[in-house]
Image (cartoon, rainbow, N blue to C red; front, side, top):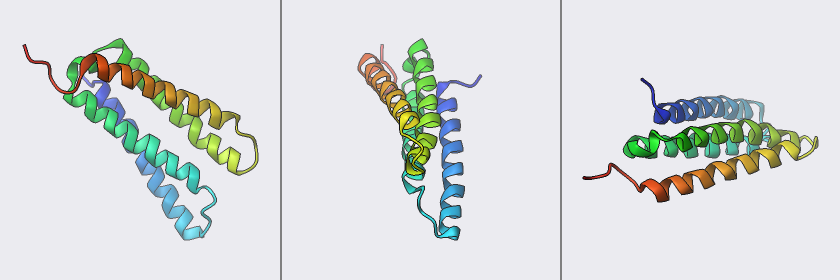
Length: 126
């Protein structure tokens, strides 16, 4: 059965794959206007979610909680809102979606903060 760590890693790999293709497109076209959105896709999507997946891999007690599932939901929704939200803001179409994505991403990190303080890092010893 696949656990929350797998889902975080899967989301991270999807984000970095999209980010790489997007970066290649920007390089070929010479248009780097969307660099801020691209950077957030790579940082929040790939790096942060990859680190979350690593944490849940080494701390299996934390991975089994309902809070971990909520954490995944907020993290994914955050990326799905912040990246296109930044793109829309760069295009001059408003910042509302970027703001929503930012709030969701901060909520995700606050959930992770609680998770780390509750569970520590690594396997618990008897």
